[in-house]
Image 1: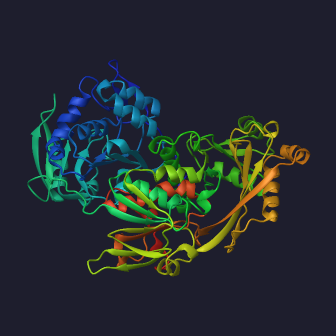
Image 2: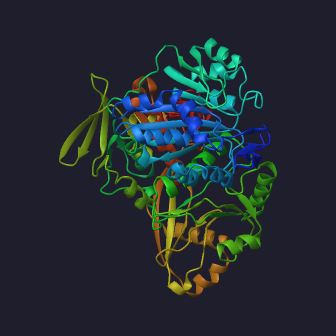
Image 3: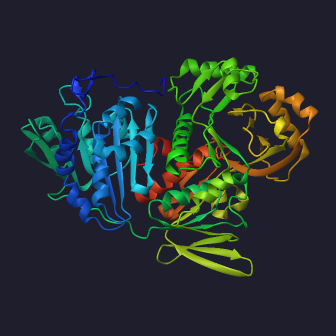
Length: 626
């Protein structure tokens, strides 16, 4: 695959302002009555007002859709959910689009519906780049999640597991877009339908009714909207639509308060879970997540491989998470962009091959010449670069602290976990050694989110081939006049952050199979040499006015395939009740938000934030299966 960018939809606009697909010769919506048609066909056709209103507190409802288009159906479902949803309820809307609209065209469409402006503005803020695969958008204060798959509908339904409570079969008409309505679609729709799942579509074509009926739907014609005589509605495996039910016991214990633990706790808390976070140390994020500054970036491979797909998906979600979902303030998160320099001949060749072999959206990654990179960075650079506009820097311990401030989260410091055991009821009993006294907690769900073998329980440590990786960062305290006017994060063998509070942070050394966290002068010197490779102009300045140096060493962990471990550790000994999140390596800032979503998705049974084939590659059990 020469990926991963998809082509944008080719639009023209009618005299009355309705968008028309030039590829399919069909309109996206009626300019005069688009919301009314959606309300009639999809909301009323699926009896959503009645079902939403009768849903119990804390319940979950999943809608699946073919053809996201302008997002009108999503916005209308969101508006109805907010009007009559249950307390602490969660609406999960998942959809597919092969030719996404540009953000500009999307916003132009939304201008036609001023009554939906509040929701449209939030969708536009998180609208993804046209990258093939799954994109997660969360609207936390609304109790709404959008999981949008960009690509082919059959690919989506063949590689994503979920059960919908309602199906919106939209898209262009079968005559104009036969690929969307192929015979292979109907068994896939049925396989993603819960019992009592409803279905509605504007089309009354006989092959659609027959296809749905052959695969378990009880279908019938209904009066169509406007000029259309008929439409199709149905219910899966029964005569009456299902009513959503609440998840039992939405309580969890998370072990670890670093990036992994904080993101898992936040993902669950924002879905209504009560979370207790246990931290062995006397402070939040005591290990690698406690570094004074960290970079959000990835290094995509030349090939559009499994590893690159996972890291790209995580990076795009993390960017969205920090800026719009968690809404981090400027002192914690600065989306200043990242420059990956072609710092030697090998990297220069790799970057050249990367851009020859791949087509990425400009807003995700693009090349810069040496002069362009220098002008963007604000300092003289020695080489050309890859530019990741969505990257930036964060302050990890402040990030963790902010996520853990959620009212559904209780943090217990000085609480090392010594043992887990199953109770006779099938729950977990967590033993805490807190100095003079021992404590016990009982909970149905435990998530282990620590980084290395020393902090892990024996069962987890023995099940994963984790290796420790020592890293040391160096902080340079400098006179204000000596600080470089650096505008972006620089990456090469190491990294250099833009200055904050009269200091520069650079690093990090990389020593596999080393669990020693003592700070060394040699590692500070190594970090300075990496800094000078990134921007040689700083060497003279720092030689003339030497800064004071302070190092911070910590131990990360990694697995042989350099992918994280996210999910059930030993399914037969606890299933989804005992989960693990670890092995983030040096990419915790990029991977941890996605990991939190994956854990929450699995526990709640909602559509996942990456494809099934990618989930299989991050499951902790992948090593026991080899």
